[in-house]
Amino acid sequence: MITTSQMYWITRLDGIVTLLAILASFLCVASVIMFVSERCDCHAVKQWSWDTNESIAARRKFGSRMCKASLMMSPVGILLYILFVMIPTEKQMAAILIVPRIANSEKVRQAGNKLYDLAVEWMDELKPNKNNNKKETAK
Image (cartoon, rainbow, N blue to C red):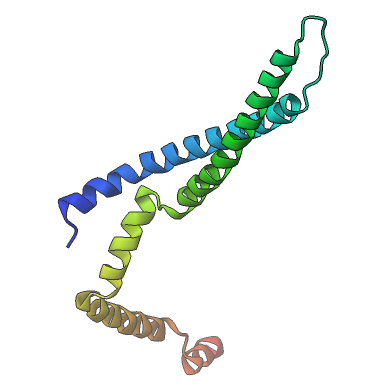
């Protein structure tokens, strides 16, 4: 029997999947941007006349922080993508819960056997009889 709690979560699954997709995409894109930024700042050198040793050191420090943040965000983004793929949608979850109950129902089994027998009898009645065909063609 499906409870109200299960029914609630079934209806929320599509929203959860969408949220996970958005978060995973955001984290992965931010991670790539931070990694590229870190590569630029980590190897900072004096480019302009106003650059000082302190500003270059600050850029390098900022670059190393970006690298650490990028390295932490990438696995989280990948984990969210895995969850996104593994969590079923509303329709999939309904099928997961309902199809086995219908397939394992004794009533469905009995009705299925009766339907099969009826279909076989119907096909036997429709099958042309060779003796009748020969008589009709001879007339």
